[in-house]
Image (tube, rainbow, N blue to C red; front, side, top):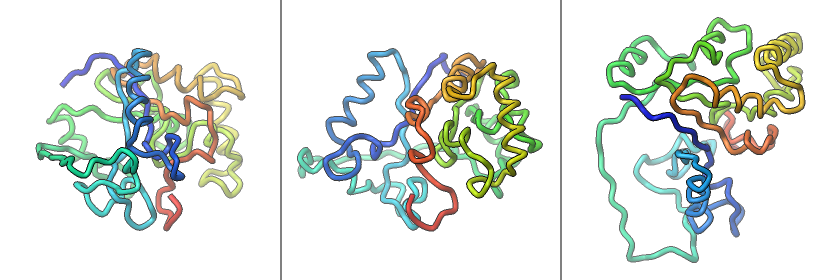
Length: 231
Protein backbone atom coordinates (compact mmCIF):
# COMPACT_ATOMS: atom_id res chain seq x y z
CA UNK A 1 0.00 0.00 0.00
CA UNK A 2 1.87 3.05 -1.26
CA UNK A 3 0.85 6.64 -0.61
CA UNK A 4 1.63 9.81 -2.56
CA UNK A 5 3.95 12.20 -0.77
CA UNK A 6 1.93 14.38 1.60
CA UNK A 7 2.13 16.46 4.76
CA UNK A 8 -0.35 17.15 7.53
CA UNK A 9 -1.03 18.71 10.91
CA UNK A 10 -2.09 16.96 14.11
CA UNK A 11 -4.64 18.96 16.11
CA UNK A 12 -7.32 17.69 18.47
CA UNK A 13 -10.58 19.72 18.38
CA UNK A 14 -10.21 20.54 22.09
CA UNK A 15 -7.20 22.72 21.19
CA UNK A 16 -9.32 25.00 19.03
CA UNK A 17 -10.88 28.15 20.52
CA UNK A 18 -14.24 27.49 22.14
CA UNK A 19 -16.88 29.41 24.05
CA UNK A 20 -17.10 26.77 26.77
CA UNK A 21 -13.50 26.28 27.82
CA UNK A 22 -12.37 23.84 25.12
CA UNK A 23 -12.70 23.56 21.38
CA UNK A 24 -15.69 21.74 19.94
CA UNK A 25 -16.89 20.27 16.66
CA UNK A 26 -18.36 23.52 15.48
CA UNK A 27 -17.56 26.18 12.90
CA UNK A 28 -13.86 26.43 13.82
CA UNK A 29 -13.40 22.68 13.53
CA UNK A 30 -14.87 22.85 10.02
CA UNK A 31 -12.73 25.82 9.03
CA UNK A 32 -9.45 24.28 10.12
CA UNK A 33 -9.15 21.54 7.45
CA UNK A 34 -10.40 24.05 4.87
CA UNK A 35 -7.55 26.36 5.84
CA UNK A 36 -5.07 23.51 5.55
CA UNK A 37 -6.38 22.65 2.09
CA UNK A 38 -5.84 26.25 0.94
CA UNK A 39 -2.17 25.97 1.93
CA UNK A 40 -1.85 22.62 0.10
CA UNK A 41 -1.54 20.63 3.32
CA UNK A 42 -3.17 17.30 2.53
CA UNK A 43 -3.86 15.72 5.91
CA UNK A 44 -5.72 16.85 9.02
CA UNK A 45 -5.10 14.34 11.82
CA UNK A 46 -6.93 14.23 15.13
CA UNK A 47 -6.98 11.98 18.17
CA UNK A 48 -9.98 9.82 19.18
CA UNK A 49 -13.20 11.69 19.87
CA UNK A 50 -14.80 9.23 22.32
CA UNK A 51 -15.80 9.98 25.92
CA UNK A 52 -12.57 9.95 27.92
CA UNK A 53 -12.13 7.44 30.73
CA UNK A 54 -10.08 7.52 33.90
CA UNK A 55 -7.14 9.89 33.62
CA UNK A 56 -8.91 11.93 30.91
CA UNK A 57 -6.68 10.49 28.20
CA UNK A 58 -8.08 10.90 24.65
CA UNK A 59 -6.76 7.43 23.81
CA UNK A 60 -8.39 5.66 26.76
CA UNK A 61 -12.10 6.05 26.13
CA UNK A 62 -15.18 4.37 27.54
CA UNK A 63 -16.44 3.53 24.07
CA UNK A 64 -14.87 3.28 20.64
CA UNK A 65 -18.22 4.09 19.04
CA UNK A 66 -19.68 6.85 21.22
CA UNK A 67 -18.80 10.51 20.81
CA UNK A 68 -17.65 12.80 23.58
CA UNK A 69 -20.61 15.06 24.49
CA UNK A 70 -18.18 17.82 25.52
CA UNK A 71 -17.28 18.24 21.84
CA UNK A 72 -20.83 19.03 20.74
CA UNK A 73 -21.23 22.57 19.47
CA UNK A 74 -24.39 23.33 21.45
CA UNK A 75 -25.60 26.19 19.30
CA UNK A 76 -25.26 24.06 16.19
CA UNK A 77 -26.57 20.70 17.38
CA UNK A 78 -29.31 19.20 15.23
CA UNK A 79 -31.47 16.80 17.26
CA UNK A 80 -32.77 15.14 14.08
CA UNK A 81 -29.29 14.29 12.81
CA UNK A 82 -28.28 10.63 13.03
CA UNK A 83 -24.78 9.36 12.45
CA UNK A 84 -23.97 5.96 11.08
CA UNK A 85 -20.82 3.97 11.51
CA UNK A 86 -19.39 1.12 9.53
CA UNK A 87 -16.96 -1.55 10.54
CA UNK A 88 -14.04 -2.86 8.56
CA UNK A 89 -10.63 -4.37 8.89
CA UNK A 90 -8.43 -2.36 11.25
CA UNK A 91 -4.87 -2.80 12.36
CA UNK A 92 -3.48 -1.12 15.45
CA UNK A 93 0.04 -1.26 16.82
CA UNK A 94 0.09 -3.16 20.09
CA UNK A 95 3.07 -2.99 22.38
CA UNK A 96 4.51 -4.62 25.46
CA UNK A 97 6.04 -2.12 27.89
CA UNK A 98 6.14 0.48 25.14
CA UNK A 99 7.89 -1.67 22.51
CA UNK A 100 6.51 -2.90 19.21
CA UNK A 101 6.92 -6.67 19.09
CA UNK A 102 8.35 -8.56 16.07
CA UNK A 103 4.93 -10.19 15.60
CA UNK A 104 3.33 -6.79 15.19
CA UNK A 105 6.05 -5.70 12.76
CA UNK A 106 5.35 -8.81 10.67
CA UNK A 107 1.59 -8.25 10.78
CA UNK A 108 1.96 -4.62 9.78
CA UNK A 109 4.24 -5.52 6.88
CA UNK A 110 1.83 -8.22 5.70
CA UNK A 111 -1.05 -5.76 5.49
CA UNK A 112 1.08 -3.00 4.01
CA UNK A 113 0.53 -0.43 6.75
CA UNK A 114 3.23 2.20 7.28
CA UNK A 115 5.37 2.40 10.39
CA UNK A 116 5.80 5.49 12.54
CA UNK A 117 9.07 7.43 12.90
CA UNK A 118 9.25 9.87 15.84
CA UNK A 119 12.10 12.35 15.56
CA UNK A 120 12.27 13.07 19.28
CA UNK A 121 13.48 9.52 19.84
CA UNK A 122 16.44 9.90 17.49
CA UNK A 123 19.13 11.49 19.61
CA UNK A 124 19.20 9.64 22.91
CA UNK A 125 21.46 6.83 24.07
CA UNK A 126 18.97 3.96 24.05
CA UNK A 127 19.56 1.07 21.68
CA UNK A 128 16.67 1.91 19.34
CA UNK A 129 17.53 5.58 18.79
CA UNK A 130 19.34 5.09 15.48
CA UNK A 131 16.15 3.76 13.84
CA UNK A 132 14.52 7.17 14.36
CA UNK A 133 17.18 9.19 12.54
CA UNK A 134 15.98 10.58 9.19
CA UNK A 135 18.78 9.10 7.08
CA UNK A 136 17.52 5.61 8.02
CA UNK A 137 13.82 6.18 7.28
CA UNK A 138 12.08 4.02 4.71
CA UNK A 139 9.84 5.61 2.13
CA UNK A 140 6.72 3.78 3.26
CA UNK A 141 6.39 5.36 6.72
CA UNK A 142 4.90 8.31 8.59
CA UNK A 143 7.35 10.69 10.21
CA UNK A 144 6.38 13.09 12.97
CA UNK A 145 8.27 15.50 15.19
CA UNK A 146 6.44 13.99 18.17
CA UNK A 147 3.44 11.94 19.20
CA UNK A 148 0.35 12.81 21.21
CA UNK A 149 1.69 11.38 24.47
CA UNK A 150 5.22 12.77 24.50
CA UNK A 151 6.29 16.35 25.06
CA UNK A 152 6.28 19.06 22.42
CA UNK A 153 9.59 19.60 20.63
CA UNK A 154 10.37 22.76 22.59
CA UNK A 155 9.24 21.17 25.85
CA UNK A 156 11.58 18.25 25.17
CA UNK A 157 14.34 20.62 24.12
CA UNK A 158 14.03 22.84 27.18
CA UNK A 159 14.03 19.93 29.62
CA UNK A 160 16.91 20.06 32.06
CA UNK A 161 16.82 16.44 33.16
CA UNK A 162 16.44 17.42 36.82
CA UNK A 163 13.07 16.09 37.92
CA UNK A 164 11.23 16.83 34.67
CA UNK A 165 12.63 13.89 32.72
CA UNK A 166 13.70 10.27 33.06
CA UNK A 167 17.05 11.34 31.56
CA UNK A 168 19.96 12.59 33.63
CA UNK A 169 21.33 16.10 33.16
CA UNK A 170 24.38 14.59 31.45
CA UNK A 171 22.19 12.58 29.08
CA UNK A 172 20.18 15.69 28.22
CA UNK A 173 23.30 17.72 27.47
CA UNK A 174 24.73 15.00 25.23
CA UNK A 175 21.41 14.56 23.45
CA UNK A 176 21.16 18.28 22.70
CA UNK A 177 24.69 18.50 21.36
CA UNK A 178 24.14 15.53 19.07
CA UNK A 179 20.78 16.88 17.85
CA UNK A 180 22.28 20.27 16.96
CA UNK A 181 25.14 18.65 15.06
CA UNK A 182 22.91 16.17 13.24
CA UNK A 183 20.26 18.73 12.29
CA UNK A 184 22.68 21.63 11.75
CA UNK A 185 20.43 23.59 14.09
CA UNK A 186 20.65 26.41 16.59
CA UNK A 187 19.46 26.21 20.16
CA UNK A 188 16.60 28.70 19.73
CA UNK A 189 14.61 27.23 16.85
CA UNK A 190 14.82 23.49 17.33
CA UNK A 191 11.15 23.01 16.41
CA UNK A 192 11.78 24.35 12.90
CA UNK A 193 14.89 22.21 12.53
CA UNK A 194 12.85 19.13 13.42
CA UNK A 195 10.02 20.10 11.06
CA UNK A 196 12.52 20.64 8.27
CA UNK A 197 14.09 17.23 8.91
CA UNK A 198 10.68 15.55 8.83
CA UNK A 199 9.66 17.24 5.60
CA UNK A 200 12.99 16.49 3.91
CA UNK A 201 13.08 12.81 4.90
CA UNK A 202 12.32 9.93 2.55
CA UNK A 203 9.02 9.15 4.32
CA UNK A 204 6.03 9.60 2.04
CA UNK A 205 3.96 11.15 4.85
CA UNK A 206 4.95 13.80 7.40
CA UNK A 207 2.72 14.91 10.30
CA UNK A 208 3.50 17.88 12.55
CA UNK A 209 1.56 18.59 15.76
CA UNK A 210 0.19 22.11 15.82
CA UNK A 211 2.02 22.77 19.09
CA UNK A 212 5.32 22.24 17.28
CA UNK A 213 4.36 24.52 14.41
CA UNK A 214 3.71 27.21 17.02
CA UNK A 215 6.90 26.46 18.95
CA UNK A 216 5.04 25.87 22.20
CA UNK A 217 6.58 24.32 25.31
CA UNK A 218 5.44 21.71 27.82
CA UNK A 219 2.41 23.79 28.78
CA UNK A 220 0.83 22.74 25.46
CA UNK A 221 1.50 19.01 25.87
CA UNK A 222 -1.57 16.94 25.00
CA UNK A 223 -1.19 13.85 27.16
CA UNK A 224 0.98 12.46 29.96
CA UNK A 225 1.24 8.69 29.76
CA UNK A 226 0.55 6.89 33.02
CA UNK A 227 -0.79 9.92 34.88
CA UNK A 228 -3.89 9.26 36.97
CA UNK A 229 -5.75 12.46 36.07
CA UNK A 230 -5.45 15.87 34.50
CA UNK A 231 -4.80 14.90 30.89
